[in-house]
Image 1 (spheres, rainbow, N blue to C red):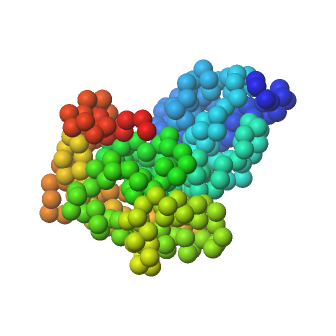
Image 2 (cartoon, rainbow, N blue to C red):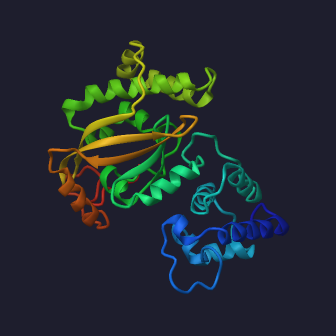
Image 3 (cartoon, helix red, strand yellow):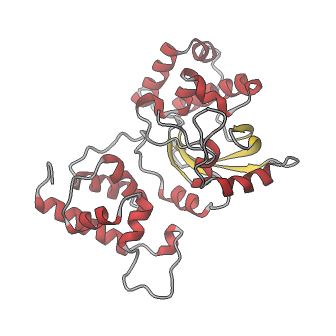
Length: 301
């Protein structure tokens, strides 16, 4: 394995195995089944949860194979419901730098990850207070697009909103001004909750001030308001307008939020979300040319 000694890699495999064996299938939304010959999860189940091949994960537990990427370590930490300390230890064993607290590979609060796993019939995702998407359930991907794999400032939907016109296709044009003001007020509230010298928030704000005159003008208004709940009109490229209630659950430190979307009363959104669950797993070519499939996946950035 590149860059790692065999002793440390063997320890990584042993650590993964110990964490796998302590988890019950029901803890991660998997059926227990009548006959399980191993405690905790099976290797193939961890591989499925982490988006890895079974052969690759087997090699990791055997202390063989190639060095796992930072993205794979983050996926394994989520699949195994590691604590923040355990996650950092896993990065150490893999000789990878621990990612910044609020980046795309941030450790998702285990309680939020558990709730997300139980939300199987409604779109839901976990984001940071800087609007970086950490994890989405399949229905959220189908509704909003796959927001994973983005790095740097573009990982923040707020940054994309003010710098990439395609990001605004998700909302009707008539709602753009209200959304812009809401995003800016929420960012100012989030930055205030952090330390005044916080590098992540400061870097994002500085980049937006340089890149977007619209953001700069709204920032100068000094509006402050967290987004706690909202009624949204979303534009799905196949289903068309979908009106939903977007509800927020904040972590204790306010740096992560669980968002889930329910149909707005008095609309046909309940039927549309039911239909979304059907087409969300299909890869139908998008007739609108906006970069979505019927499953809502964005084309690569």
